[in-house]
Image (tube, rainbow, N blue to C red; front, top):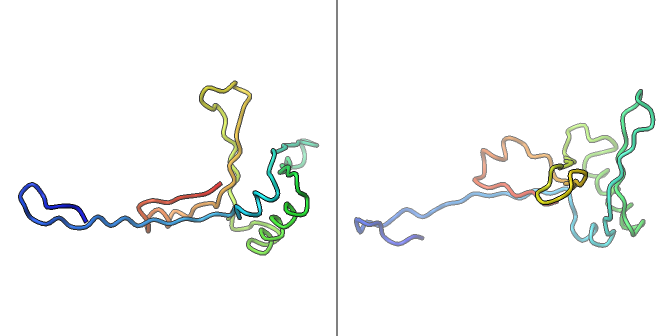
Length: 119
């Protein structure tokens, strides 16, 4: 609780509502050791493909098994968001980073003052 106001009257407590959501199981990702992302276009008539590159195959498989349990074979509700971020500060124009997060629901921002997404 904050101290009294300048007038000497007690102040109301500051209440901050926050939420955290993630599609990343940190321990599994640490075990799998994510090393990169590949983007492939095989034929202009079919959608491109993206691959996540890991060092530990068994741990990587468990990540995708958990995702299938959580969202199914197809992420119809778009629970997982993959963002490719370009134009990074102080980096060559060809550099990019990839963020994998939960796809936030607009309602999350109405319910909490702060929303944290882990990637």
